Amino acid sequence: MAWLPSAREVDWDAVYKDQLPRVYNYLRFRIGNEADAEELTSRTFEKAWRGRKLYQRNLAGFSTWLFTIAQNVAIDHLRSSRPHLPLEAAMDVVTVDTPQDDAERASNLTRLAAVMQRLSERDQEVIALKYGADLTNREIARVTGLSESNVGTLLHRAVRELRSGWESRESSHE
Image (cartoon, rainbow, N blue to C red; front, top):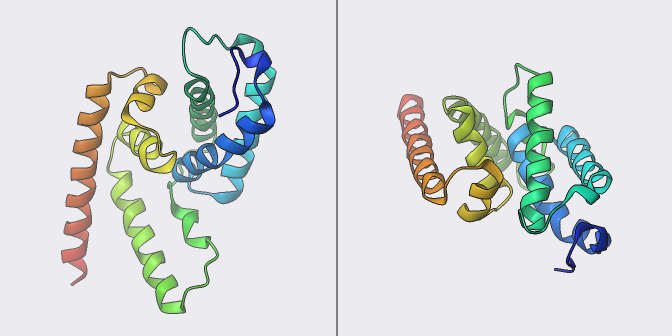
């Protein structure tokens, strides 16, 4: 990565290229709508650019600072657009698969969205950071203010709850 000692000296082109997919994936996973995720990704980088003088390397790593901004952008969006079903729009993703593959994927995404809705907001956030943004437990802890061990526990329980909900919905479809 091409960041230097302070945000004022960051190679923003390199940061954008490196972090854009992670920020977008996090927001896409968290928000569930491609157009909104694109807009919120743009807003995240704009806020980071405008607030670059506020970044303090001694307080957090640059990606942690950036994901904190992304998290706040997502929270603001969710508050302003309630009620909202995360992942609902993920069914619109263009694929080159067969119609049967598309139908199965759509069914699975609908089931996942329903199971995700049963999780608390905090658990949904931790799942989105882990699997949407591909952050480590340590990075999630920094972004959320939770301990790393608490993040691990939350992820373990949330995944167990998702599996349980998935299996119970699966058996009800048989």
